[in-house]
Length: 173
Image 1: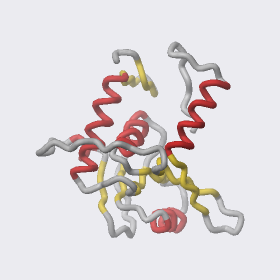
Image 2 (image 1 turned 120 degrees about the horizontal axis):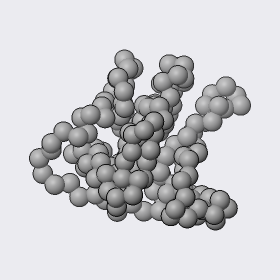
Image 3 (image 1 turned 135 degrees about the horizontal axis):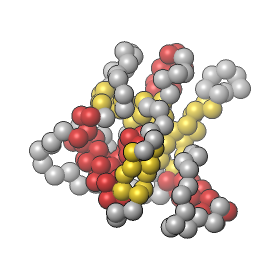
């Protein structure tokens, strides 16, 4: 638990910290009404916090939709609406966007909440994330990736790249 799980620009998080922070984020999302099979739009850039947020969203039983603020506004709005997002989670400053659902900031996820919120059991058949292609017709197309697909990919990558517990592995996907 005390080994380094994440590092980025001289900031480090241990496996225990990753577990505790992602659990807190998941419980906060559940407290705010996020449930299994909900979609949380994750407005972020690559960072330690993004990994913690992804893990927390998955632990809450929801799937995440990665949103890159550098995309055109219309494309982001289309993706959010098309994916039927239940909430937007901002890791940085919030953006004024037409969205009828919940808007949550990363820092809010670590506020004290009353009550205990049990994390759901996530089934392999549930969606993990939704990724949008550029769309050959000019309209982005969403692809839902399930937990079972993600597990298959991780097992494949571990085998192909010969990853061991002593390896440092960059985040590619």
